[in-house]
Length: 321
Ligand SMILES: Cc1cc2nc3c(=O)[nH]c(=O)nc-3n(C[C@H](O)[C@H](O)[C@H](O)COP(=O)(O)OP(=O)(O)OC[C@H]3O[C@@H](n4cnc5c(N)ncnc54)[C@H](O)[C@@H]3O)c2cc1C
Image (cartoon, protein in one colour):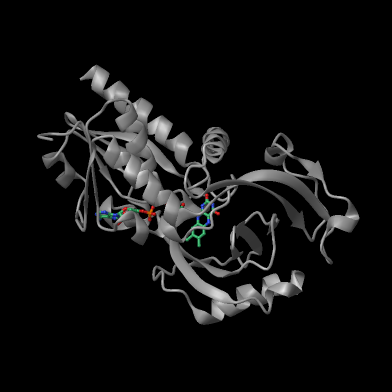
């Protein structure tokens, strides 16, 4: 490819999903990233579809369209994508949140269905994504579309990308803090523990409005992922054994069979936290940057909706040029 139409920076879920959509519109795409997909923060995510851990007025729209895409992928057995029944529950009196009410399988739990200490909960069906195989399959899709990929390249500015293409799409996640630079991007480390699944077929999540010492269990076949944690300001993704121990204890306090299950591994990653997701066009003379970063704790959940929106912006720029 001599000169692509678009240079995508980043090979996490945002960069790969956006590249898939751009290539589907017959654009010539080149993707560059420091980390290959399997080494990105995206690979560490759980990941359950959940529209609440990122801020932007369009999150509900992006999340809803992503839900549809994941459901279709699950039906087509796309690697890593499942649609799973489960329960979200709160220890405090509350009414079910508006975003849950129209989801497939929604119904309020009977008191007897809730674990001890929980007073409100609801069933629903949600996509759960096993990220390593999912990212590998997205990567294969991008390559099959004819796009080029280059890993191990660290850009020091987005303008550097204009040497390769007139439009740069910035999907650099927490890397945007230095690359843009954008001090509004703050790292939040998250951790998960993978155990041999003692038989959980449904997910369970404690309802919280904010990231913190969370409790969630995500079944992925023989593996059960236990979460979670959120440590503000920590940019080192290396899992902390004490945090892992605390996660297993919290989950084990609710589901005692977890205490004795074999630990298979640990995952750590950085959530690219930002007060608002940044999905916008920036014009620099006759060249353009389209930003798509800052998805905090919901980057998987909004990935397809954001990719569609970036693609609309890029197509508009190309039409106007
Ligand atoms: C433990 C954990 C659990 C999570 N659970 C969920 C969940 O259940 N549901 C959900 O929706 N979300 C979840 N998230 C959040 C989600 O994972 C993120 O929002 C999402 O992965 C962000 O993806 P990204 O592609 O924007 O960034 P990343 O995955 O961080 O990818 C960034 C890419 O940009 C590249 N890059 C950065 N800077 C540069 C540079 N200067 N030059 C070149 N390349 C660069 C990197 O190398 C990498 O390839 C979780 C996150 C964690 C850590």
